[in-house]
View 1 (cartoon, rainbow, N blue to C red):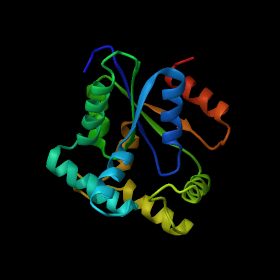
View 2: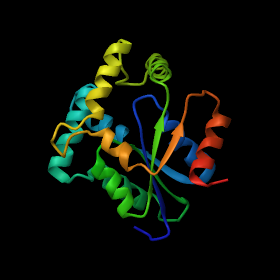
View 3: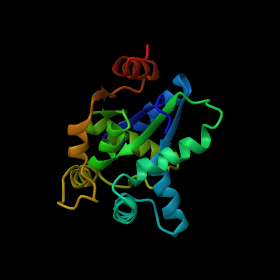
Length: 197
């Protein structure tokens, strides 16, 4: 990977706006945005499975065991290298880190890990809107089920290949609070946090 490339890893709970931050960096600052959640969804579709959270957790664990603990970040880097032959991108932004070894890989490459967060009710409502717009795999659950699943993803099971978002949060370098639907406010928060303005 080129030394001068900037790499940013995004993490945070479901519905916090990681994709919004990634898309903003792509549109305004010439980053290539890669959602590892989309990589997982694509593989689940190939296997004829739904993209519900449980299946995505199982697949990401399977890949970490088979290909290494930073496989999702490494796959994003391969995609970046193949896509940036003409040098059109300033850097790579990868969402959503859900395992501490993914954060470590970003740091090993000289990158920054950003934790994106929002009030749980705001995040739940965002997922309901995404579901109504047809986003595959977004929760058809109650708020209580949503928060219960989140606790599973935040805690360590003792298996280093599984999700442990609390550990990713601890390794994060920056925090972006995203309780707003105002994209200009979000853009300013992102630019302030990352020193891009």
